[in-house]
Length: 232
Ligand SMILES: NC(=O)c1ccc[n+]([C@@H]2O[C@H](COP(=O)([O-])OP(=O)(O)OC[C@H]3O[C@@H](n4cnc5c(N)ncnc54)[C@H](OP(=O)(O)O)[C@@H]3O)[C@@H](O)[C@H]2O)c1
Image (cartoon, rainbow, N blue to C red; front, side):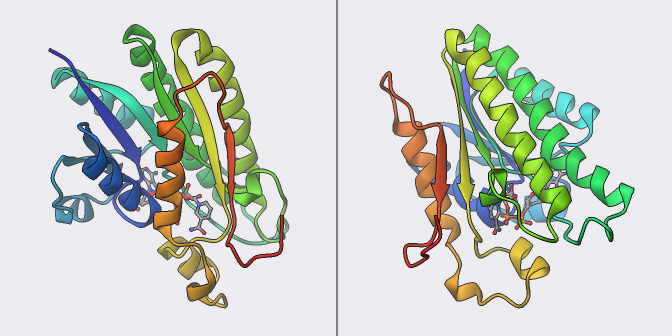
């Protein structure tokens, strides 16, 4: 008999790992996390979490991950498209290779995982797809052209997922945090005081809030800012 499971892409560290642990602790589902670094995945020992090596930008990796789940009779009930890379610099400094790397992981990866999940969710009465966007899904910050374009694209993908999935009971939402205290920010913005950033657990709270929504009305874009921030 098939078992519902959750997939958290980029679940080996940062926000994704905190979301994966929360899902594993608060639901009956097995949580599959993926990333490129096999050693890091193997180092995560947590009940109900399994790691699969998968570079989401590579179609054959994504197909293999879903085939592995099929073979274990696991059906994706929840997909969290969290994997992303940030390469930061002005438009004039950004190389084509950097631009394409960011779009390949952040947009193509989310598309491939969404496509493979939707096929299975449609046959199994629906599911939930939550994309981890960013404040730059809606705003434009300097030195973030490739990343900002990718997060705007993820917002567009979310909107289309929501309308194409509605009849099949597939609900798509996007969470758009400001700066979160993870390695990504530490690497990109060493000038920031990390104690003033949002905690990864706050993003996990928003994911659980979205998953708990069962009614006809739905919150589809969830912005997250620090309580003390004046910016809307
Ligand atoms: N940190 C922030 O301030 C912030 C703010 C708003 C939104 N976000 C978003 O939140 C999400 C998580 O960010 P984070 O700060 O937690 O990042 P992070 O600490 O850099 O973690 C990124 C995760 O994605 C995985 N990953 C990267 N490239 C991948 C690929 N090609 N295939 C599969 N997995 C891949 C990484 O594992 P491997 O390296 O092993 O592949 C890692 O598990 C991202 O979507 C990010 O854009 C972050």
